[in-house]
Image (cartoon, rainbow, N blue to C red; front, side, top):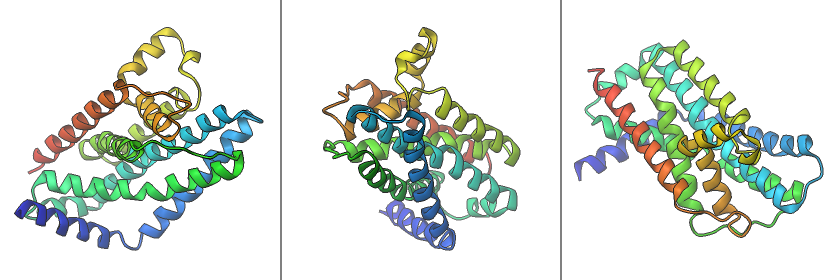
Length: 244
């Protein structure tokens, strides 16, 4: 009971600490999501409904990844560089509570981008989504997995090291991960690699739950993303515990 109370109090404290920046994050998520959704349409041109669903769900996935793999770790690294993060670690809160509460804030910030992608995709391509019941846990798992992975360099390296990692993350996911294009376009070794990396599975989760009729989903993406999320969370927790 004490742990849950600490979690709630620390979550409130995190929200209040970032109160001034939250509107900026919300606006950025909406703008970036709309830009990615429209941008894919400009690159591809006129497409059928299935391709439109593919591109719109890809935009949703990219927005979740950008927040978890780029924005969150860079903000944490900036806070560490200013000394604020080290001060927060002195609070009488378990490290697991600290990490979970901070990650939950970043996961919540993904909601405006998700809504923006759906609205713009529906308007631009005339889509009528029929998501399955699993869309909520799928989006939460993808957001948590991306944030957990992005958290690792943020609590391990300095500001420059984190910046380099986030750039590799975003370039790799946008250009060399079959999220916005079919996996068949990759060479055989690339397809095999992405069977074990989490990013293609994240795209499959979002795609398969947002449009289950067009993109059937099996259990493998759930397992792959869940494993990476747990590994990222435990790695972040381990690095924080070493910073006593």
